[in-house]
Length: 136
DNA sequence: AGTAAGGAAGGGG
DNA sequence: CCCCTTCCTTACT
Image (tube, rainbow, N blue to C red; front, side, top):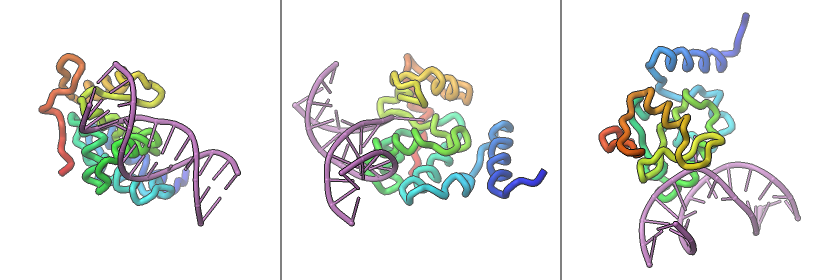
């Protein structure tokens, strides 16, 4: 079976996730349709370590668009490669998990369970401060 | 090409 | 808790 280099890049990403490793850059195929803003958001999001989270607002700030937290939300909502690009590690400034996929009640079960499975600590429905990662 | 609508947010009152 | 602002994308005109 022959496969495109783009596909194998994606497959490798999934293998690494399955092994608990993660990847350093989003597969190029996933970014072909992305604007500069989206590229920066995804490149940064992929650096969030397993077991940690950051917020829409901080992410917006480090990619050079302070105040664009809502735009970052849009970017995550249209994430071309969920899990490989760990959109579940981006949460609200209140440290509540926020929305995920079609779970728009601000308390996504799926998102919280993904995070817990990665070792993120919760304290009364909020993520513990010790699990917040600052993108720098 | 111009514009209006709206979102996985955030800060303020 | 509600309302207004912000920045970006998308859908129409």
